Length: 73
Image (cartoon, rainbow, N blue to C red; front, side, top):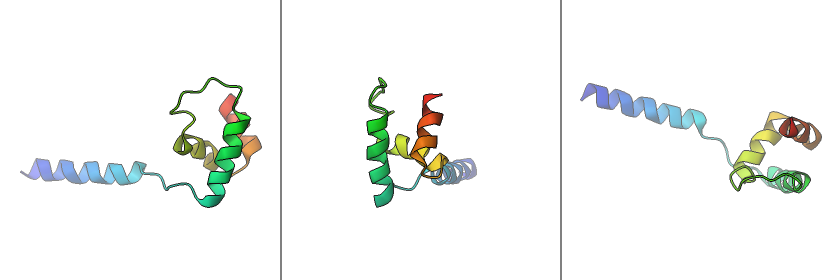
């Protein structure tokens, strides 16, 4: 019983650790612009998802130029 409880709490804490906040209204606008910039690439549906693209945008503190450069490398 203890191990099941311990495993449950570990899984719950891992889930919270890896759960990313939803994009803000400002970020949704940036995501749209970022997606347009990447139109020449053959990206999967997952790669083009809002949550994937916002990761790149956040990693470069909302600079689309820097996010695009990093994405294309």
